[in-house]
Amino acid sequence: LSLHDALPILKIPAGAFWPPPKIQSALVVLVPDAARAAALVDAPGLQTLLSGIFSHRRQTLGNALKHHLGEAWTQDVKDKLAEAGFDLNKRPETFSVDQFLRLQQALGSSIRE
Image 1 (cartoon, rainbow, N blue to C red):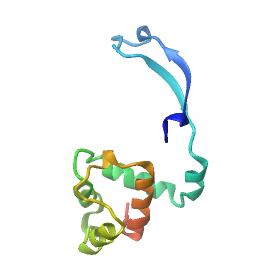
Image 2 (image 1 turned 90 degrees about the vertical axis):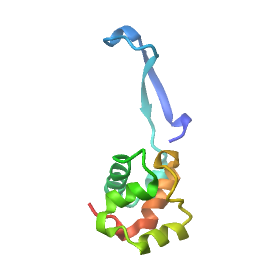
Image 3 (image 1 turned 30 degrees about the horizontal axis):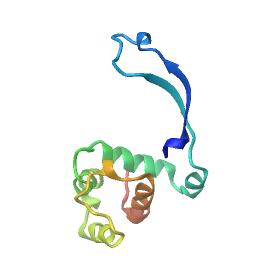
């Protein structure tokens, strides 16, 4: 999502929380990008991939995938990702939505629940 996909609905005062935060809060509606949603073939698979990666979010992409894929984390998978232009030393938190969609495509049948 980009910033224009988040629609502010209501400002929530700090007094609505205990203890009151030192930041402002708001209720927002996130509007999915229609083109990305239409291109998404396997939403549950993407959710599983993201869950697996972000359960190790402070690790590099390579280490997070190693934990997530287990025995499926082979040299062939590493090579396929390198050919697709993924830097396994980057942290997943730096990736864009489109990069995660490409990652899912690049991994293909390597992803297992």
